[in-house]
Length: 115
Length: 110
Image (tube, rainbow over all chains, first blue to last red; front, side, top):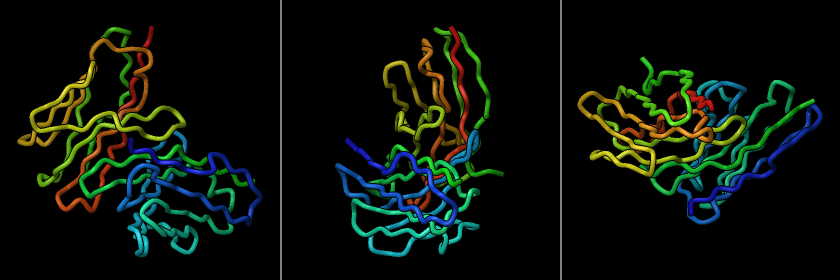
């Protein structure tokens, strides 16, 4: 149980392109979903927290207009990296949890490479 | 002081060894605790929850010490496949935040 699917796994695109990443909880309803970014050999960095039907809460330093998050249902959240540039290249990982003291379950991650 | 602190390692141990990691947390009102493992270039995966009475899952034993505010993970009979980064996770009362430690790297060698 507790499967989270993230799509796509790998994206390579030109600078200036917007990229949309989907995160789905397949076998549970996720009250909260999280978006992280991780650079090589570094720790997970929380970008934002989203609850279904409400606006995402962004961490300090994360541009909400650059990283658009939509949590449309209890099983789907999307992250759109708008007008991506090479410095946005990273490993983006979503996670979801069923309740406030439940563990987070992670998607497989999306490797984003901007040329 | 970081909210959750772990020794980054790396811990280099031979196969068959027993290895233990500690993780300290600063918020005494923390309520839920977990250990995750993360393989290189992969997502974190839940290894086990940590219960007040301590719990075991095969070769893995987790302990919680509320008085000293730390949790531990013990791995017995280490396997090559145990090589990974182990992340300590704490959820304070209220459940609004999930705090990840920076991780402890383990290398198990033949």
